[in-house]
Length: 316
Length: 316
Image (tube, rainbow over all chains, first blue to last red; front, side, top):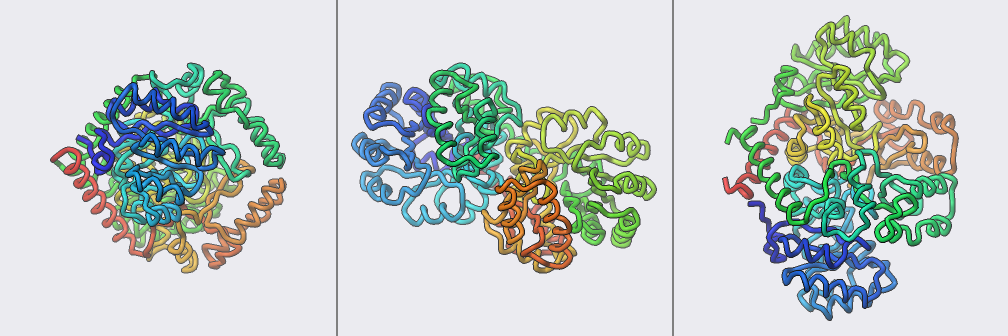
């Protein structure tokens, strides 16, 4: 049975996190993942604090198991979101887009576990020093906002640099990927795209369909020139964005094109002019399943893969 | 003992290829890797045919075991290099930068194994149909000329799409990486950067030093705008190149800056204005070792990793 120290740390059954995606990481999805034994994470994104309270309530209507909130540190509401998390005693916080240093001390006072998402060794080491309980190390094959290093290259370098547990994100959608990152030294996986293609995900059916239709080369990186690269499924918006970027458009022009684009895709199902954030592993995803099946199938496949490798190469 | 069908196919002891790097993949390095049980590969690059003959002789002075030649299909000498490979009955050919279709039929007449390097599912499927004996699937974390998909995302998608063996390249420098790609379904690994940091590699000591000094964020991708992206260690040349690219320089201007740059780094040791091609896994490489030790250490570590995972997660 695949169980790691991350399960003990957080009180969960499977070392599987659902990425705290803005708009897509709703209370319903997070609650369903937690109820099924993983760690569901609400993506607070740019949510106002009242909205987060509602999503937390939805999680608690579904499950009494541990769950998390992802705080986007650049959000104008970051400070207030932090207060809600404390008030509601959310068990786990993940953070993106910056250094959660100042918040970390407060969370720790309330025994809230803090697990920052990192994309480099330097930030990993710094956040370990500042008290992070674990880290999500995210490769550039992930959907949404990304760094510059791939999962294969990043995980072992971060594992060697810190002693807290590392959860791998980016490029994982099945049991093979899970065993791969366990071999690299990770103690768990975080998946985003795989959970978007679930029954419980409250994204528009056309968004899910876009993931199922994607092949290996369907995603592109936009915004590298702005310093805030984002991986999306290539569509009309992405092509416009890349064209403007190549022409040397100003950050303001690009931002204007991007404003509201994720909501348009997730909520309205505009998969042409919306931002369909998804990872490079989309090409491997061929079905929409309940989150319980997603997790149980992955654990089962991971055990089979490991058993096959052992027999083949250890003669065991 | 980690042995796969690739070992049987090629008559080698370890399922480890040394990437056929231009300038760095010399007869001495390739011969040493083959003699130690892997598949050494001469990087023909833009070599004229006589130079390749000399390198093949060097391999054969070191070993009588199987080895390979990498043919860069864009080379002006590609056709003549192909003739030398046939004349010399080189056991294995890998190919880059294009579709080796027309050459493939000729090689097969002489029972020369053909193993194209691919970076997408579409090309993998096409080359299997055209008779490839196996494929090297290369992630964008590799050094040198690269594609757009990471190893973690690419390997399972290609493994699912073809039935010939897949050798994984990109982001692998130790036994953890080897087990990771075996879990993803690969039947072997190809490593470039790890072998450049070997005693036998005939690259300038300053080139090796640059790899040892590299951290996780030391490499950059240049030339994405030209359609021929290349991963190198960030230096003065790379910065100039990126600046020109951002300014919308013409392909000709960029090509001019790149001409002779790899030779400058490998042969002259100019690590400021030369092209120091290296993978994102450079940050993991901390020593220069004999190729025999590199391979034996990796196999040993891979077996240990697999054994540890089995004990932890299969209770075996």
